[in-house]
Length: 433
Image (cartoon, rainbow, N blue to C red; front, side, top):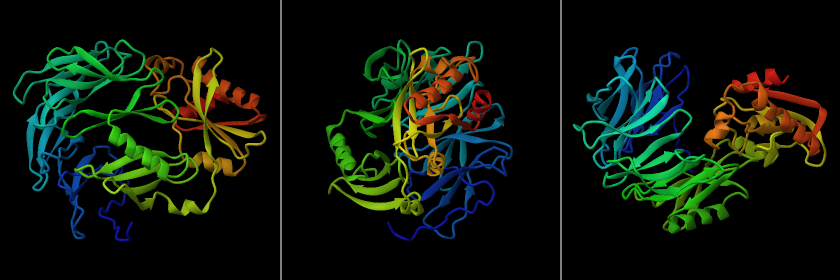
């Protein structure tokens, strides 16, 4: 990396939480609200000019912007949903990035929660709504800008699913769905009929995670899963070979991920996620097969030695397998234990460097994080096993069982256990104490 980095925004209140590039490769887009009112607007700034000032692309007082979509085939445009016409409904607007001019593209009929596009035309052809009568999720499609909307697929309450993308010809689409199965599977669906034509990828242990498509052909290149650690199924042998080279070249035991790439797919920004240190980023030249260091997320941490995080399996009292993550101060003897409970509860913990766990391990504690029933990402039944069980019953028993497991394994001292967390994790801590 070089040393020419500079600050391009001037926010002094809340900090910018979401930033991304426009497809013109010079304009940086970011979301920000007004002093914490949570009515986020979309801003643009020319990142190539030191004197550039941010422009509000959605300058409607009291309105909120969301659902921003860009397209490499239309680098001078973007689509953004704004609720300025009706505070309860987000219409889709087309924005000229250079001038900031907004044009109403698709009006919300009143029940649409999110929008999607067909890539070749950059037309709004997907709408997602929820039926308030039964909490089912409905995915609608249309064949063109002026065509009528129709239901493609309905996900009853308790099911999970969403459209991933249209195929290149627009006649089929890729959909994630739990219909007829426990975990989300990636399927190909007929856009005209909603019929599933084939299942492309799935796992019996957890939901499909990341999906990488070819930008032009829309063919699936790789699908990832994360039961305990990241695993991938490749459909592109060249891509698979690249990942194997990157894994071999990175820090031992780290997880490789693709942060960004050029349009010709020949230059990648690659990240290495570690459990015992900060994430490292490299610039990878696919043609040469060479990687150049870019930066480390927290370089000051490189001077210190940290504990490793181990992914573990914990049996609950009813036999349900729970995935946990263990960070130990001393792997040779039992120590005081902190049970660190994630929030949500419709969320989960992942393997990787955790500053809270490392801080506690540095002070002599073992830290156990467990994806108790009700955590997301595993299956629809695993998720809903936590229904009506927040802080009580089996959902809370999972935390108790995790501590008992740690004691039985010689990891924790029985009478020196603490429970700690934030949000739902804080509530579970109160119930556990």
